[in-house]
Image 1 (cartoon, rainbow, N blue to C red):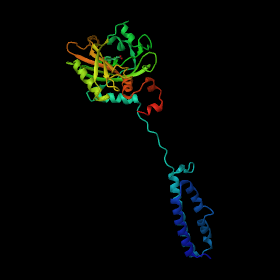
Image 2: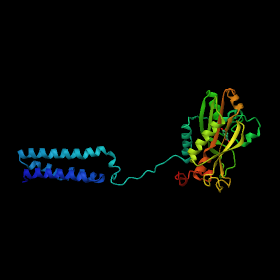
Image 3: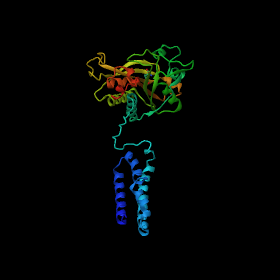
Image 4: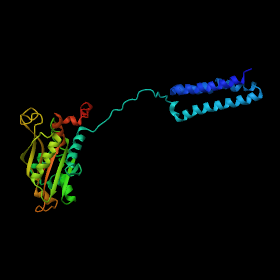
Length: 338
Ligand code: DAH
């Protein structure tokens, strides 16, 4: 005849053991614990079945204890089960080390664009945008390219139909902005442009430009020089010097192309600068009166400067990238370097 004291102590031991095992088990092992402690063949079940052999008084106390033990163990196992309903389907091993997720970052062209914008933003320029599908009027006519003028050949154009084309530069944003607001205007227009050129290491059918425009009542070429020198020393470093060469653009007069002293040889001549000592970085000039006329700005009151630079070009110079096509191949071995 089993002794009630012994059974009570067996119940306490069982419960303590179950709790210890539970807290030390991994999820897969926990699945087995429930049937081991509460199933038909469990010691607890044997005790419950043996109750009928006990004298009345003991049956009541032991029965009560055994039921309480069963209830507590059931609660322990079920609470964990319901909080991890999917454990049965996929028993995870929470002790495995995590899988690292690779961290992405902005494309080198986005990074360059952001850097350029940040520098000019600090000088008071606001960002403006325009469409990539443009009309002949905004891309050419309003920028003082006369019809059939050979200047249009400077930019081999993808025409979509008689009226529409893929913009060949970001300069049309100048017109759109000036049409919609009065001076003072100080904007920066970054964006994608398209040219129907032979593809090679130096030119691609798609690339990016940043356009700048400042119009106010008393803007001079010296102001233009000031912002470009400030930009160049910020982006390329304080040691670069700038060289302004006379040039031609239909929408500026006078016009200039601007070079920086070669980043590699500092002007002595090397293969990067083709022994010139200088690298071209942008076009610029004073806004042409015909452009002001197109947007109805009074040329006797207002003056302004404009500039435009290729983002790929300055990124290539700064980082020593020798083929423009690398930007568009999405080869991670290239992209990860920046
Ligand atoms: N739009 C010209 C190009 O794509 C670059 C340029 C030159 C922009 C002079 C300007 C400028 O704003 O003043 O070749």
